[in-house]
Image (cartoon, rainbow, N blue to C red):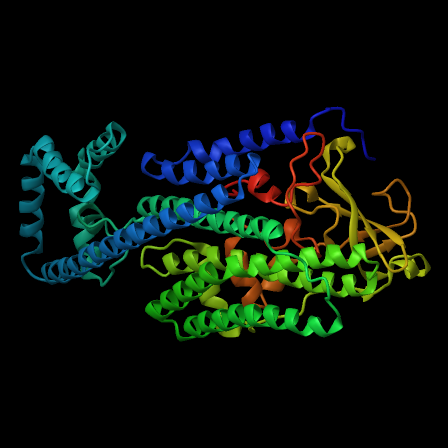
Length: 526
């Protein structure tokens, strides 16, 4: 049951909570990556000061810095992979030599000589030799914690390697879990992979957040500079559809290139396809966002002169354009993650699953879509019918709930008939997602005559998409879900789509923040 918001300044309170939520991700990062987080957090200040040109510059800086760090990380991965393959090759050669000794007559004498030599070695001298190599590779001094771990590794080496048992197992043809090989050629790269994944998280965060900021900056700049067409008519609809189709084709062809590269299973082709699409998105999306501002201004003009039907048709196209924008932002993050994930030391389970299942995975799948219902005829729908409704947002709220459940309410209006309808979305804060009054919205859900989520009154309970399950039979969905930690096209998996809205700061309301995602969405989700 909705509860009244007692604070006279809900926006200020929400921003304080959002800032607090950002701190854990920020504080856990290595020092060399903190600059990426600082740049991403700086974007918020430009939004709060309502300086869209400043946000545009800051967003481009964020993307540039993120790409520079991506190239550094890529270079580090390549050199690390080279060293890893070199050590692996040396290990195989060592294994070949040991196997020859293990099946020869001199095995016992060789084992005794090696045991004696290990006992006579000075642990400190051995540690110093290891430190020189380790610090040379790391480029800096090792921590005291690392030194302690190395000392433990060296202490009691002669007992742990169990020479006699190791040689006997090698003579029997075994090659796995041999103590002697573990001691001299450890193959555990999990800690290195974790460090690389942490760096990748920060790099992709900076790139993704910069692109989202650039989109909102370009949209809001164009709102003030691009005038609405005063003579807009049905004939102009085709031009809008063409702009949207061109951008949709760009994304679709990029996804298909990546899909084909994954089917071939060649890392170089996968990386090239990913970086090609990411570059296309970064260069074309700002202009596409500006075009959506022109659509927004034209809709406002159509509503002003009473052309509700034409405004609705244009609103539907604005929804399509914004969802393509969200798919583009998610695709950019997914591209960089997949490009980095193709490296040999990758421990990314989702990417491994994608590469494993790609051969039986169709390219796309149809998402659930309700029966189209006009708002004026919604009340005549049977109880529990799965419907699709659309209209302009009259009201959007997310009041506190008993028990702490997150719930949002939308009121949609049809300007042609003046009919209104209510919808509720579980586990979502729609004002923080950027849904504003005046935006056009399209959603699918279950119609209830007496919704328990809306005080027993009629409402559509918005459907939750089972994206993880859908992703098993759709490469596009599975690929886009790679971006979930940084950006989610479907907020809280809701079957809900809306058009970009103007960002206006109002201390007494959270419902006017078209760029709300930049203020309230975590930099990196767990």
